[in-house]
Image 1 (tube, rainbow, N blue to C red):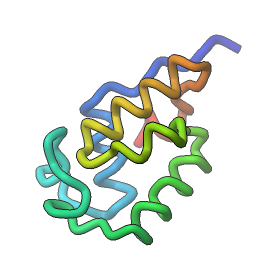
Image 2: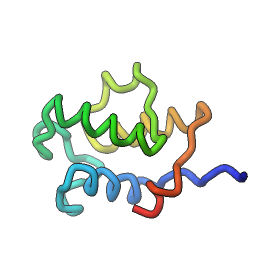
Image 3: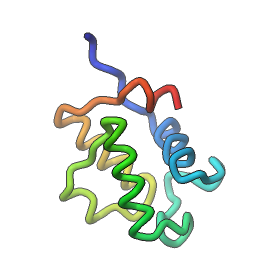
Image 4: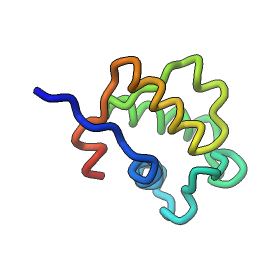
Length: 93
């Protein structure tokens, strides 16, 4: 089976908006999870678990530095470059 293409930043924002049930307009790359999107630690863990169920993983050491959506996308790309890939469910949104 060929490798799935990686999610673009726009697709990643769409996925985050969908999973957090937020308006897509609010989920911009520079949006801060806590201050702008009001994502507390419990919602963040829940989000990470749901993404993991879709086989979207992040290097655990990178998660300490995630403050914005773009930070999360960079962590996703770091994990993808280490062998992960975007599943069909996430791409289809």
